Length: 409
Image 1 (spheres, rainbow, N blue to C red):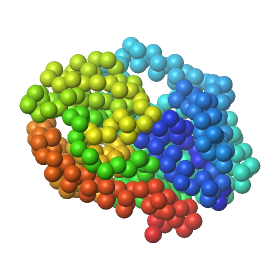
Image 2 (cartoon, rainbow, N blue to C red):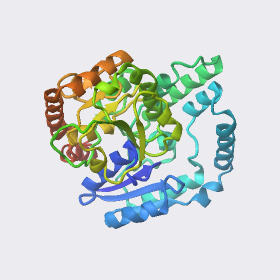
Image 3 (tube, rainbow, N blue to C red):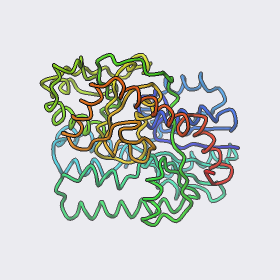
């Protein structure tokens, strides 16, 4: 089957859940299908990354939409300048925060780009075009009728917006704009032939608000190194980049509200380590009673995280948390919020610990670090869930059924 993937994120380096989700699915299916990846060239999607992917995947064709072509679109250029200035001058303003959350920017979707994509579809005789991520959702209106259109909804945008902006008092026109975006999201989804969500929770949500096209659940996978639990080394680890707002929000909540409730000195905890790019130095000083280390992006997650306890203090967003699967595959006990594990088949006090208040999160950490038998029980059960439902083998079979049959049976 000839499949063209239109994505805002080139799936390398593997420094985000979205990149991992794409990478592992393409890696597992590239020998079975003719896959072409179309993406915008920018600072996030470098030509060096494309070269590395070409080395790993000689079967896959990459078609970058060059940055100079994007600059020809005056709206794209103006939005980049406008947002850069606002980010520098108004980054602490609630009004700017609302705008930042509601309006994707930095992606050209003008007619030149549409012609570029249509030419690739024609040249490749595409059977399917798979559109990834919300900023390209409305691109469906620029696609030809004779190609099956599949949208991969990594994160329902209106849920993410409502959760992230719940604590900000919005002005009437901002509320109306958010509702317009919500209605537009539903209308655009209904223009696809198939919508794919990563969890059944997201599928049911979209059905309840009027998405009438077929919605299939096709979980993302991680191609993590599977490891058995082999004891705890005294470290607590968070995995995720600073650029993803739910990561920033969740980790700041943990450091400000949870860490003061724990008597770290008597718990044999050496440090809280943050793995992921972009974290500023000041994050290390938020918690006063525990050492916080920024490890940045790591090439080998197994080496960096082995033997630690994973925390997933996520408060907002939607979709599927890849860090949950990383922990399950690598034998790491995990403590998460309900939002963090939403839509996944891990159960409280069986394969993970779930806590939603600072007090409960602190108590869950205390239980896990105080009991070797609990740590082993959690990891053994989580590994079973991972292998049965979220391994590359299981998820690639489901995605193939979407392509061939329009079902996940």
